[in-house]
Length: 473
Image: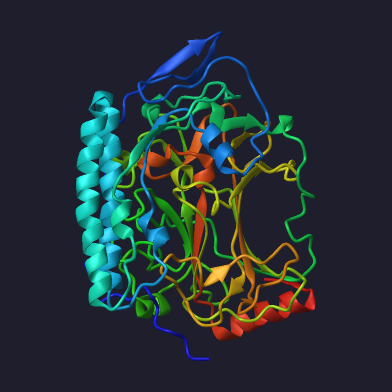
């Protein structure tokens, strides 16, 4: 069946990003508090850590649970990109550029407010003015291309939110003062041993189908940038946080489909697919190469980047239906990088520890016992509409199956990707995923992205393995 034109089509190629700067500059101020010989994350003007008490849990995935896991203040703005239901290809480049500007405006407003908490009203008024002008340009671009902007003009106003919660367990010796004003916070952590088992521990689908694993390495070549080719194509620093990439070696914000198709790859079997996710950092005051760069220190993402100890990229099925091949260049994502302010309707990542994977957390970072590694699991939607390789909000063309494992009317099952990442975190050390500044490095914002560039023969092999119950690689 003929594929429709990709929504995020771009005209022309802008210049490539260069390597991240190593220029010197000050880190965000350090603040530690010692208590009985145990260092804890210090409270800052915008980062109350809660008082007294400890708790377990952290297994919920509702909006209230996400709110309870943040102990600071942030700026909450409507997510314009998620409100788009159609995007004419002719309008896509201009709309994407302006969506990127909206993210930059929120990031800068949050930083101004963090530096001067008393300027809240002025910051919000200036932000609403800037957002109003940018949203107006988005609406006009849609109208010129024959689209329907709807009520986008109502989305310019933002508000501040403050969340308080009882303090939770925190790694002893945590040294997160270098970014204590934008998370993570004490109550973002929980000892995995205090969490009750809540899954079977063997994967969401219980091995009811075969699988195919693509071997792509651990990003040993250091392919990182703060771009997002799916959500913000053509926008430099569109993510405002650093991504780890494996697979396709050409991926950045300006990569065309032709460039991706002709690029090298870290995967075996000729798989040129793009796999990426936010980096994980130790909050240890370590000065990384991007300490003064956009997406790094300039966006509040500081500390030592941790390379995964293991990366597993596995495709499987539900067992309820036979899967069919994915189309070339299919865009697919899971989780929501702005789930702290958007709510958790699209949040989908889970956290655990090796040896404890029957206990999964949605809105807490696990504290793992000695000898156990931190585990991030990112399961992708697997019901394709059979026509589009992208959609205006990057979600409606590929959705999750129902509870029975079957796809709804008009959708067909495709191989489900699960990204499983493990990290050897030193004992008693605080850590966090990179995030937008206003998302406070909350664990509920974890997410992953995938662009399919498997050769057709390899895709057929994967489909055959899954449908026949074999495990292949």
